[in-house]
Length: 278
Image 1 (cartoon, rainbow, N blue to C red):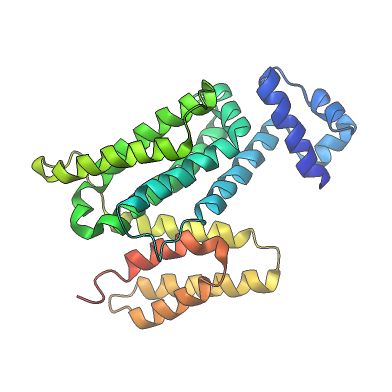
Image 2 (cartoon, rainbow, N blue to C red):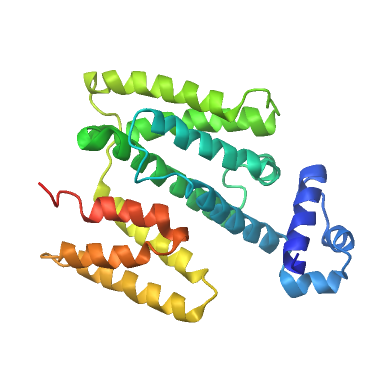
């Protein structure tokens, strides 16, 4: 294990056991069997370590969600499949999320809050896309309402599983329960006007930014340059009033070669090429 990864691992254990504020840099260094001075070779501060952890686990969540097969999962049971994957991702990294929920209340730290909001936005975007993917564009006007409901149920479920340690309920059971009740809501959702408004156009720039950040994590500079140039071409073409959708589709196909982009590129494809066949 790389020394930096070892430091973050032992730090996370200490944060979960003692609390973030109660854990000193010296304690982290001692547990990692390095000097306090060596700690600062890897992180400028304890807060910098926490920010690095949030970024790391943000991408671990994305990697877990890449297991969902967007090309095949297109029926009502797919929602339960997706939700189960997400719950498993949270449970898999429960020590980290336990520290995050318990030690960092909303707005407690500007930088931490910014990273948490970025993680939440990724989740919100995925929830929007899963509804669109399964139920089609008939739900467009209600996407924000449905995401609000799903996020609320998921948040409480995760808190019960991670914070209160009620893990006798399986992720599959929770996923099926949530999916069943959401499907019931969807059957009657058009009986009321939507509470919230959602514009697909607003989410496209967010997706471009998410893909840019994923590309920046690529270690191979040659690959990184190719992906950056490809994404830039897609973005430039999209901004044109008479954008060439065939070109955009071909460029997206190239980006799909990288499995780390799978969800984000699929989401971009749905938004950039919507209406092409109509």
